[in-house]
Length: 385
Image 1 (spheres, one colour):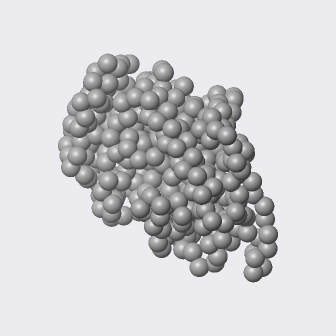
Image 2 (cartoon, rainbow, N blue to C red):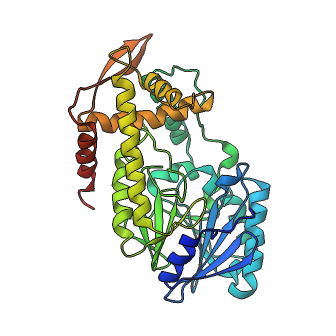
């Protein structure tokens, strides 16, 4: 478990006090929050190879215990989780009363220890554990041959269409991250459903099935929003609920929710003291990035560019040249912005065959006011919120 508290900031402490949330430290890497209703949350921060990204796992300590996220498939991370449960068990009977596990999204650092935890919890039990994961992400947690093929196929299609070719490294399903679905009950909640009485919020963008859990005046948000980093986006090519457009809509949604539930616990990092403010800052971040990507393409020597060419020029121009796996991730991030740019009138795109692959070529369209175009375009994603 990491040394740093979730509360090293005066602003965070002040925000919690204003919301009548009491905070206490149980042990290094394990903290407790008592909400105005009397509801208690415990946050365990578990080990990752990259310390700034140590995941936060949240225990909702009600009549039953619900755990939100389980951490990566690493011995050290799972040991941290077990240690937290051992510390909580004398008061809250975690091993007996933990009935439900919520997976906020299907990235390995949030669900990778699921099978290890289920196996431990089922020792001496007959009642199955309920595992909640949105349907749009569940085929990663419980993969099939078809879903693994589709995952690899969509990533290859994206790499080809973006001009990366076939040599770019990217994610695959890893069998050792897999689960045994017969050992738990998989439930796929939708927007507005509840887990142990707590509201599920669908927040697509970082992944298609990103979900948050609202508990009183706190939102447990996974990686939909984080204290410091702005979560990476994905391309619309991967899933109908992928892409920056969905992330923009989710930020507007979080900004609205933040009026009643201003505190958020992200999947990594410190407490978010002002959810609405952070959501609006993330919208501004993506607005600024889209404007910079537009100017990168507009100022290029060539009229049309692939997604990879624009990504390479944009990130290199910001002193962050893309190498290795970052070539793929940087191109995904750039293309997600290009997709929105095409929708709001900043870019046009056409497809042509190159060496047997269908490649997308983007052209920056002259506009009189880039910022105004982006602002009005983003506002369009407020609809239905």
